Length: 454
Image (cartoon, rainbow, N blue to C red; front, side):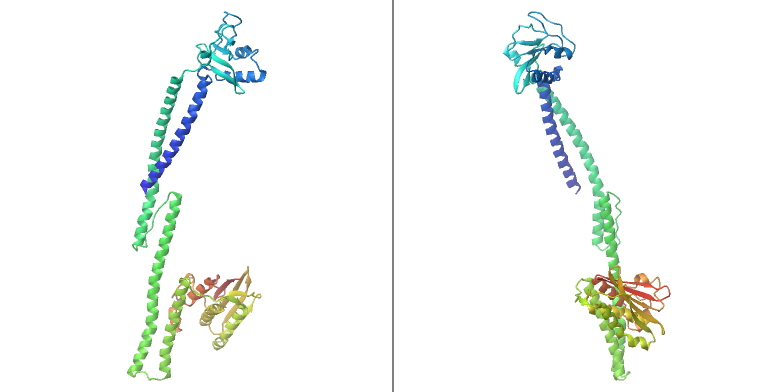
């Protein structure tokens, strides 16, 4: 990967430097030729546009000597054979000649001199509207140092440009190596950690601090590794719990059957009912595990339809009325506000309410109360099941919905609990797009809160 990054850098550097070289060479060539062609090498580059502007405005060269005098170029010759002294500046000894070779202004030629055409061709053309109106000649008669000088100057500039490109390329290559190393180091660390994770070493973590993007990737990797480690721990714990939960009723069932077989227990209805109760417990446990497996796989089918949730709550409560009277517990249903129709699977919601009411009645002492309150709060349907029992220990609250978790294991097992009821209840609520939470009341007792979208 380092080689690929370096090659990518080299390609980018090469393209960038080549483009810079080509455009710089082209622009330099144009500027040098324009500079030389307009007499820049002898200091007349500013005079040429002034002369063009002068002729453009007046349409003739009358009085042009004032332009030369004002720019410090010298004075015009005023007759045949009469030469005027040169003005100051490096390009003072120059002449302005019309296209026919007649002197317009000169510090070196007599006014009646006719300049040959071949000498005019070496001067600087003064063009106005695409037509040559005059030529500007230096004292030597040549406004250009010649093609050899131009070629030599361009060669020097080209060599300097190539040298600068090589130096820039080497610096860029060194920076590419440094950057590639900086980028590759955390990538190698992540690759090595990923290989360790693939080998089952789920405690693998990485420490990537920079650059920011890779640091974020490293943090995400650590979160993934932590999730996998937690999932593996939960899988092992769940496997052990399932084995334990299955072993106990199976052992009791086998003992009862062997006692019946050996004649220790009489073969009557009471003995058979004991075996049947253990079989029912096993059946419930297997069914609970099946539901959880479907939920985890996202394959639990919900038969949703418009449901009157208030009627469903009242109907479910009525089924527990006899059990509440038997245990001398007051079971009430309170409507804080009317409920709208909701799109749910009524059988699954009733399963959740069954589980919560069973728990409430189980942990509420004789003479206590179990209240069901429902209403609409902040655009959501809320159903609360509250009991007057001892509540849930603060240490147990965070784990109350974990699989096979029991705050009071011995008591749950005596009453036939599988330790999966609350887990299934919450998963069913989540599958409906809602939630199930638990808390303790200030005066004692637990509060289970069902939330469903309207």
